[in-house]
Length: 212
Ligand SMILES: [Zn+2]
Image 1 (cartoon, rainbow, N blue to C red):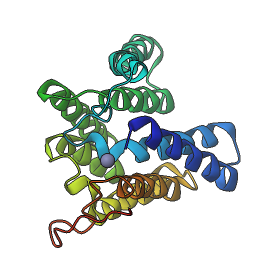
Image 2 (image 1 turned 30 degrees about the vertical axis):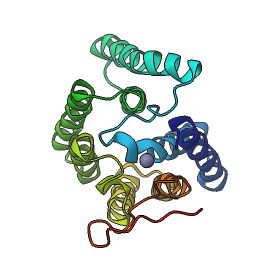
Image 3 (image 1 turned 120 degrees about the horizontal axis):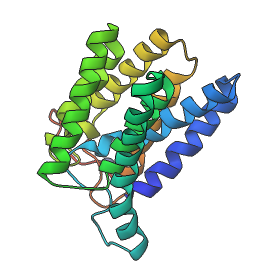
Image 4 (image 1 turned 60 degrees about the vertical axis):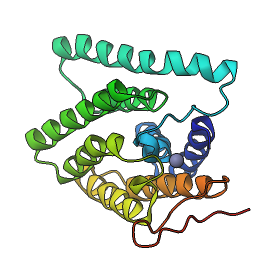
């Protein structure tokens, strides 16, 4: 399943969550970002989202997306060192860079994703946040896993839901847990519709589930 499809579904889920839970524009933007990011997070594993049948558009996105993320982080660092790091723009810039990196593949990309995970672990340690600790660990490990392996299972979904619940409690953002879990679930459901399917219960059950 293409990254853009996952992203579209995730955004739609985020808008739905925002309609149900949010009372402010900031909260709505956060829920939409969380759901969109969650809908792509499973493909932080070792494969490119856009690798199959590259159209001209996806080739351009593939080149531009990581650079957009790099620019966002550079802008954040330039602005943040002068004015202090606000949590919201920082989270948005890091999320954008990670999203950009899902469009790439290879060892350098994997190392970059893991490096971002390490930065999250550092932030978790500084801020004493168990939610960020879980998210950081996920981002560090995911790129080195086989494509459509462990990140595409109900165990990963349960872990993601737990991280969302923890962050919802820590950051006091109602709907964050629901938006993240629904976003992640949508990814696995969408991949189940593709010919190779999803090994939902791997490694317990090796069978690939697909709807054809
Ligand atoms: Zn996938």
